[in-house]
Image (cartoon, rainbow, N blue to C red):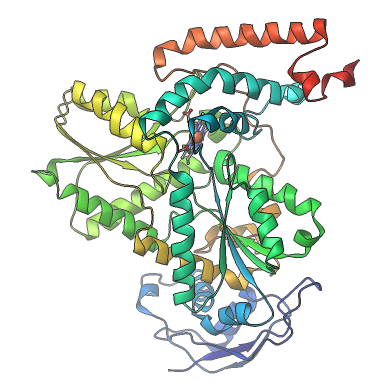
Length: 514
Ligand SMILES: C=CC1=C(C)c2cc3[nH]c(cc4nc(cc5[nH]c(cc1n2)c(C)c5CCC(=O)O)C(CCC(=O)O)=C4C)c(C)c3C=C
Ligand SMILES: [Fe+2]
């Protein structure tokens, strides 16, 4: 076995945190393929930041997982790049045991821990312009509107949360995932610290960032806990992070990289497939069960007008899981639908509830629901799927219902997340790869700013706000609730202007117009 050796002479591009004692690193590249030395050098050059020196090339061999990628040097060079990345164990260790301190920031949504938290949690959610984006002229209404909607929705949301034990389990599960990820990283010789930053509830992203600063982290891997990217989830968290980074001198100089989505990773796909296989075995006739992937929806306009890659990533993710199941000789029928829509605008279709009814009408007797857009149990698995959809299915003629648990701390999954972090380490602080490379690489990476620019290059407006909300759990209430909401917002505005008191004054917005 030969090896490729290279010496990263000066990996950093920011003078504030140089790696002063980078050792001579050796990277093994397996060879069973026809690369020429020139090709491998070219490949390494394309992967490494410009100032890296490839000190010596001898030979290498490629591992089996590359063999299906035939005939394309471009593909091979990508693969080789990924291999180089994943094999640099000694370099990764250098990141943390040298003068650098590596942190991993897990981004998640957060959830109310008690019933009293529900309304303020909802306020934070609806105050997010990536959830409701008002036309520029009406931006000043964002907070009053969020206050209004959250107050109106809170009673029904509370019902939901009280039925699952009085609060969201999200914090507890995410903390456990962080701890398991930390252990997995240490077991792989990467002694990093892992932080949790929630978008809408404690521990808020701001709190995590404060801790990161106190700990003196110099290199940060940002890992949203959403397998697929959506403007409304990872995008929103990253946008917030971007604004925090911009305003803080320490953070501006801290090197970071982002793993924007990871639904395509082998470990994640295998973990999902094995959970599905295990649940299928609980049915009397496993091969007759319809595998029903149920993803959280987003308004259709996010995908069609704002360019959200969520739907495409979701569909690809389902295909990959089904391919994996096929390898495990499981060839069940399957379908993908979208749940949890809010308000009367059109969301991604088909809708989960309508699809369940249709399947019942077509004579399907057994369904295994697979929550696919989130890796923790939460209100929408524990209440919506386990209670509402199950009930609907049974009413629609489906006799057998099962549900795949969320991944949580499943070891294969956590170990794969750790690998994703390790593979991303050489990118930390390196000049970002081009958009093309980011899209093709096994772990697409880039800085927060570049990522957001790639997804939202012209800062296009997200679709018109969903101003008409449903705040009941039932769909039939939508229209009237929506009309009432519009009327109430109108009355609210009239009162504000005529009395000089109200939400806008409270937030110091309206005096601007006096
Ligand atoms: C990938 C997952 C999610 C997407 C996409 C998403 C988009 C999205 N959500 C709302 C509105 C609400 N979401 C709520 C809770 C909630 N949302 C997700 C995930 C995604 N949301 C999770 C995991 C949770 C549950 C958190 C928990 O506490 O367990 C809620 C609050 C619950 C309720 O009252 O129904 C709202 C409201 C919109 C509008 C949106 C896309 C624009
Ligand atoms: Fe949501």
